[in-house]
Amino acid sequence: MSYEADLIADRRRLRGRVTVWRALAFVALLGLVVLGGLVWFDGGVSRSRPHVARVTLDGLITGDQRTIDLIDDVRRASAVRAVVLRIDSPGGTTAGSEALHEALRLLARDKPVVAVVDTLAASGGYIAALGADRIVVRETSLVGSIGVLFQYPNVSGLLDSIGVGVEEVKSSPLKAAPNGFSPTSPEARAALDSLVQDSFDWFKRLVRERRGFSDAELARVADGRVFTGRQGIELRLVDQVGGERDALAWLTSERSIAKNLPVREWRRRSRDETFDLIGGAAFVAEAAGFERLAAAVGKLGGGMAVHRLDGLLALWHPEGEK
Image (cartoon, rainbow, N blue to C red):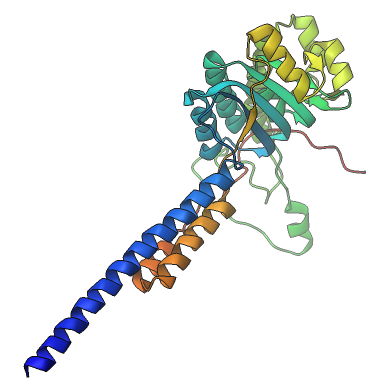
């Protein structure tokens, strides 16, 4: 009996040791996953040494919190001496563009910011560029599109042709108007026009203040058109033709930024990368024998919200063929 008791005790001690080693292995492997993820997110370079931060804004601008947080992180980073803002965007929502512009102006109060336009900085993309201290463009870049847009589909004609009607009961004629299921009333159109014009006035006021335009100069550029970089120089929409090298040279000559500072990429964490990191952690937990923990970690990847492009737009797109 004593032999069997000793054997059971030894098994329990061995099981405890295995559990401890599994836990240690999980912590070590999880640390490697997280470290690898951080290196990936940082572009494989250190952010602890003095450098110029490169922040890229591309695609639709929605004012998403990840982008705002990134800009705030750059502003707070003591190692960042200046910022190169690379822009390639047709714009997005007016509210999102406003939030982005405000974040960039806050950044520019602490660190010099130069915007470098690659292909396009139109509408909300140009609003973002106005947040910088200087705007550098290619000769063939497209900039401008100063205007506001409200678009909605109207399928009332289609519904009439197939004999379908949409009934509604609402508190007032302008509630939920326009709705796309019936012709837009003159009153609803006037209400929408008031919204668009008010946002347009805000956009023009921003351009006037940031570029120092007179009313006549503003009128030349505020008809919704885009302009090439060369045209933008003549119209004073932008400051200089060039690229990132020219932006860095301006920072050295005009803002006393050290000439040989490295440029480090700062970028927001994408949802795909977040899912990869969470998936890696779940895999490590399962491999270490912690099935319940793996399941719990895996659930962290669920419930992610999807951005909606809603409301008034500061967005440029070429007209389709008619």
